Length: 292
Image (cartoon, rainbow, N blue to C red; front, top):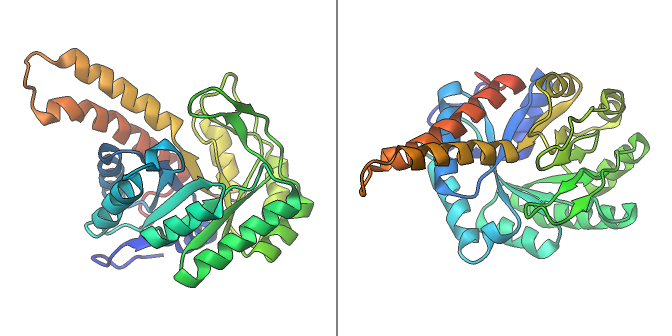
């Protein structure tokens, strides 16, 4: 798909993933918590002509003014870029957060009912679609459970693989536009390398009428990610790899200071450069370069 240059490029998840599924690539999706991330990611995607999903993660980062600040920055910055940009709420578990995101101008929301019994997951996902779709907002649901540790590393959740027999009914009943599935990844930093269940993914892709999403993309071996994209994954969520890169840049910045009033580029440049490296690597890995 060729996107019109110069057009306001804030768009929906449904739109960008439809092209990804048709053309056999995946769109990188990055959790963004500060302005330095937004700029580094968007400028790199512009250079590489890649569509991108910028995600705001439910939690402390959106508390207080966070609901206006980071989403507002993304909405404003999207006007200055000619690649498709999706503003996406990541891992909401309640309808109040969904409504807030829709009212704040998000173009996509994820409702994570994966920890609920199947019928309750269906109900909250269906209710999310009823809230979001009339405003033109896309909905991502999750079926099965991608485990791992939380951001504070205090709570570990075990993964539960997605059952192919549940997918068709879930998608048809809820009306979600994309489906996050569990095939062996986990959130956070891996203690040992995962082994993705590609045979399970093939079954899921065969029965799903909507594009499939893979969470826990950081640290997963490249060859497994590429195999997953070849077999139906259209969006890959990435956060831990970005945090690792920024920490590396932050250390380099601190180590390089030689004066009490360093220029801004010396302070933030190493952080942006390390993050941009990760973004470029993910775009090349997922095959999304030159797709905008």
